[in-house]
Length: 256
Ligand code: 13P
Image (cartoon, rainbow, N blue to C red; front, top):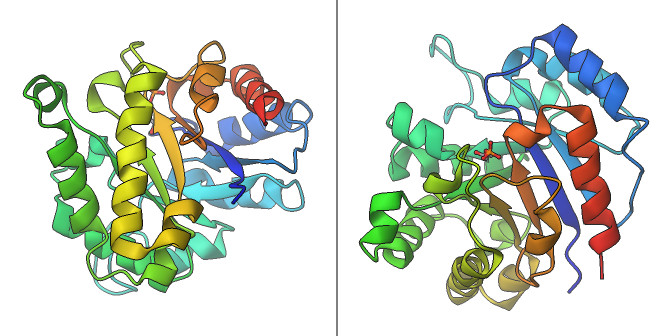
């Protein structure tokens, strides 16, 4: 089954609406449309409406970095799935390691958010990954399996197939030290098998797996060479339109 490649730009807590607009205006002419490749911008909440308007009809997708697990109500400061959809979002990150570590999001909360996203028609991008201590302690496989099992608990197999899973080793995020493509693929191959054992062949073959952690225009091709890696979740290198355009160009020309 051919899976469409995805390059997702996670801007984290960067860019005002004005800066978002400047980025999009500069990026659009550089980002050649590629049927085999999907490009996704994940700006902060405050830029979503502006980005959504600018991206209509461009073929570039929009997503958010988080959502609340309830549909609406007295949750001061939170943002709902319906609000994201109304801004033009199709995707939403769930369980990014920065939220897990800095805001103490646990697996149970990640599961509630993921289920809300699915119920609301958003495609969740579930982030998993081990810390350096877990890797050194030989705990990577166990940790990732636990994150997957908890996050996908109660999710129907038919809802798993469009899901996206980003493998982001915590020690590779923002450090300039990416995982080796072979090491990343080893973990990602196991993620695919785990999804398959729990949800069947279609889910195994349909789920898109992204690598994240110090992806650059220079190293993107080495990850996409690997059959189990369907794209990338890019942080720092996605903040400059020229750098993101170079990553997209490398990913397009890599398509087998
Ligand atoms: P960097 O690309 O800056 O390492 O960030 C990766 C990341 O956390 C994307 O979600």
